[in-house]
Length: 281
Image (cartoon, rainbow, N blue to C red; front, top):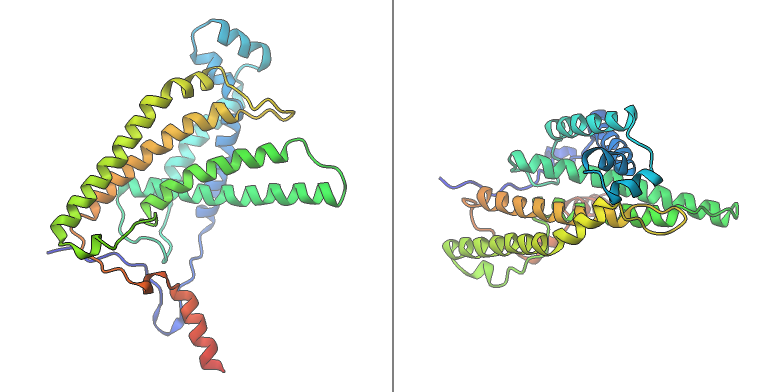
């Protein structure tokens, strides 16, 4: 027996489209994870000085940064605890992909973290606009912090897109071939993603590790560690994307073929609202 295609749940009888209402845990855990991760990342040099061998690099870090304290170690514990809790408690929205496994939980929780980062990013931009144009007191940190947050959003959203199968795909040839050839295409595309990830890790490991170990900063007044954090994050996220691609291949192997049409681009909730408006008129 072949599995049915896991489609999102759009309506609940005559009650209209289901509205996803996250619980307090689903909101607070990603936000708490962001706060703990931000503290740990901002104090990254303190951990580098602990785990790195003595040398010029450690001496240079010691001249600029303080050693790790209790709050720094507490942030590490909170990152682990909140990550595990978030992965275990994350739930699917009705509009999201309904079939998932163990690793899909990781990707969806990271997607929730990314959504929280978007909210923080917008808040920082609004704060800067108000201070700059209303109070004429611009900050020194909003621009660099926006770039930093946007970089993480850009990277992490790719993992969520892969889990949701929402990346760009061209189905003109794919829909015209039998299932066994579609599986062949899926294997080839997944293999190419894995090879790209391996090539990127092989080519970028040296530069990323160097920037991380010397905690390279942006060189501005705020001076955030964009190179030291984003370069390694690229390698980490591309690895997760490759693992998610393999997980998708395994879980979608026995799904029935889907014929894609122009109707796929129609938002069911928007269509339902239009129907209600026409009916009320």
